Amino acid sequence: MTADEGGLPGIRRNVPTAIHVQISEHIRLRIASGQWPAHYRLKSEPELAQEFGVSRGTVHRALTTLIEEGLLRQVRGRGTFVTSTVIEPSIAQKLSTLSEDFASQGVVATTEVRECCLITPPRPVAALLDLTSPDAQVLRLVRVRTIPEGPVALLFNFVRADLAPGIERADFTSSSLFGELEGTFGLRIATARRTFSAEAATEETARALAVEQGSPVQYLQQVTYLDDGRPVEYSDVWIHSGRLRVTSLLLRR
Image (tube, rainbow, N blue to C red; front, side, top):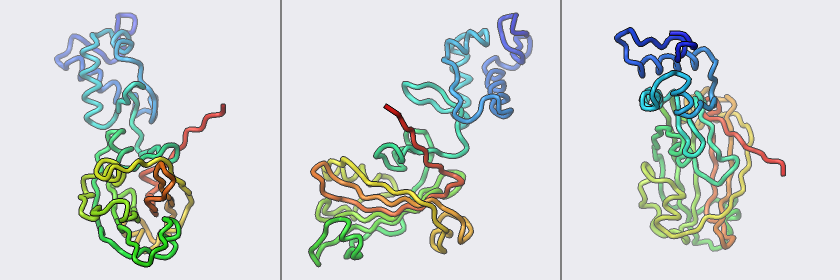
């Protein structure tokens, strides 16, 4: 069928292959060829239906197949996009966690909790969290986040235990730190200070992220504050930059 006949090249009605399967394959070829690169926004379903010369339901079925395969993703209110092979969280532009970003992008991620216990904070951490009492304790939480391609982040979090008593009993394999602080303990997280830099992977970081020791990794340092100005959490995060790239959206007003 030609475009002048009401469809696009490759869409045939006189073959046993279902139309929605043909459309899915046509889109796969456009993605594979680079014609539709990562982050490309597709036309709306009605526009694609008109372009392909088919019903909207047929287009929807084809797109659903590709979304399930991970080639496309839908963002509510924005449209359907070609999936990037590198995850791009928005942690450089808004106060969200990696798990929240993964969930919003439909990325399947697992969390391995390597340590979750109360400790006396190291002196620099105590200073950043405004802890002056020698009896003060913090939660030390060590996790590794992994996507199907492999580990993407090694996280060390230190949380003030006086603001979240009992937090060491939380199951962080399935819940996020911010989710526990806000949902379980009723704290209102307001702001954070984040610093990004590049570092050479130490032996521990290299093992956790499955990279060579000395390889460049992205390092994120953060102090999180409640709405009353009190610091509640300090974190060190090492990111596998080959699998997860941090991006910022900048506006000039």
